[in-house]
Image 1 (tube, rainbow, N blue to C red):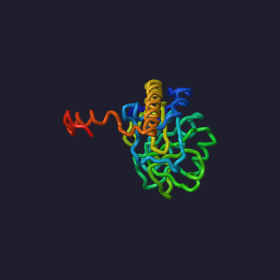
Image 2: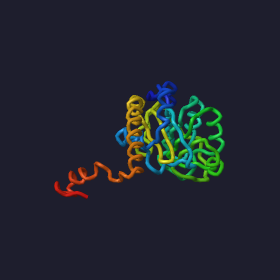
Image 3: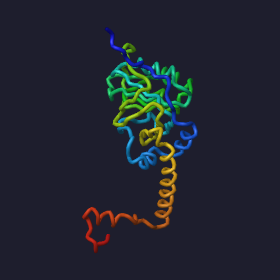
Image 4: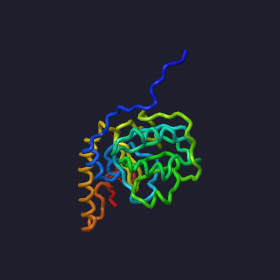
Length: 230
């Protein structure tokens, strides 16, 4: 008897809202990561192909077998405008999972960008235009299109858990994942942190170059006695 299996393509997901995406996109990935508890960042091997690339949107999650991109093609077909394709490629960079043709298809479909924990190719073409592609490496070898993967199921990618519909924000520093249910709170905290950092930078420019918290932190760490100062 054949065992029942789950469908491998999940079309019904709940996405972070367009308005929350718009507001979150106003902040650096670093600001969002800090106020999210320094969690949810992808490993630093995931980099934009060009420094100015930025992306924000709900995740369409993809799990593939190393070296095979069949499930990515399925994701490209069902993704909606504004979505971000997030591919768990297992960190394998022995061959590319995406190149210029697939990126052109994604851009024409209104997909906001692509994050791949794997390799891509056609880097000259991809890096010379603004469409955001983030990847773990480059390789000219092409993929197979034979092996089953899954679309819109939870994935673990480059050290972070991602659920379909979670918020993805990426920039030159890297990529952060914000769980959909936490996005409004993270945005509110990001607004406060940005205001505080802006105020601190202005104070430094005005001559206040001593961080006010440093001495107390050093005392608590045992690096200064209670009577010592810097």
